[in-house]
Image (tube, rainbow, N blue to C red; front, side, top):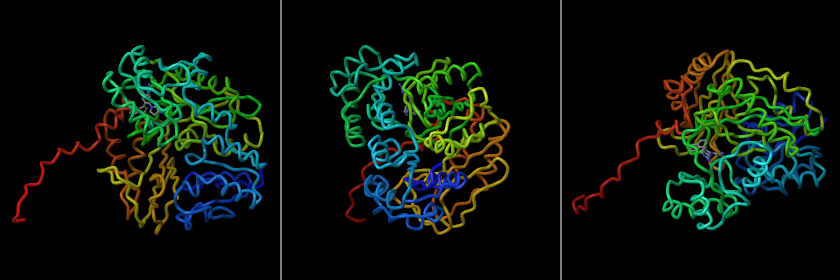
Length: 461
Ligand code: MV4
């Protein structure tokens, strides 16, 4: 097994990786920016090294600094976590070239799945259902998009070929809207991914976002660990994830699971991955993309399967074959993850500040993953996700009751969080019945402020 692993991340996932390493007897090296000098992941690791100033581009995205830290400290592996460099093919390749094992898929699979039109083409040829959309390598001109949209019929969705997770995405309902929104989506893609390549897909209304967890070893064995329903999102930021998906039948789970495993197997994928599908109201499902990293919501799958996904990812990177066969995977109970964001729940703006009175909930089936402590200052430079509350119980109904109790018990002072929003959702009858789609959170948006009339010009005030 690896002797020393460098954790190329921060926050909750860095801590999660350090814990897995400790169980496996691997010593750890944390990296940190100057904004994270006092962070928990730094204190928990066996060794640590500062890799640059707060801006992510200069620290957690700084490939030379991370590689030099890894070689200086004698690490033999690097775990990228999620976000930052986790889906950067150049980073995976650079690690291998420096003699470091990258805990994740091979660079070519990161690049392949990062090219969304190419991934669609491969999946379609492999018999995995995809939505009608742009063929070939994608479109860069509005008139090409117009041709595709005419063929597909409105509504269509503009997506970034190098995108994922909803950045650069726009719903378009007619040709005029396409003319207006295509340049905006393209501008966003250029700013975020340095790519002008876009593609269109038929827009599936009121669908559910259902993703399958894949494990694949380097001996070409691949299995799935069931699904997560991630339909509860706001502006493509997931808020609650759960497993099992409350509307999936055993038959459909098996069919989608097989398609997900095929998606990974057909390209010879290795390590952990997630195959995202859209599920329509009448049980049709379509591949939308594959994520080539451990995901924020992996804990939900861990609770229902008992499989430690982070430990498995490290074992597979070492070259160990999967011990688990598909028919040995068992599913127990139900689990939900509540993402706790440091944000003003009314205005949805980040709420940085100093945490005081930190009292996370506990008890049977209550798991909290967080890097918070009293006196911790939530930095403004990174994602506002500060904790994940994962609740497990026998049934979905019991998960909801347990989650309500846990969220009421949760105390975080000094900053604003979205805990009140979670409690509102848990009291929503449609949510409790499991009846929701990707548009669910729109009902909890604050009413759009009326354009206020211009203030009267008055010399007296
Ligand atoms: C879609 C879709 C409907 N039709 N694609 C969002 C994130 C990215 N991974 C894929 N996403 C979607 N792709 C087609 N062709 C719906 C979503 C979607 C979504 C859309 C609007 C508002 C909330 C959403 C939540 C999850 C998925």
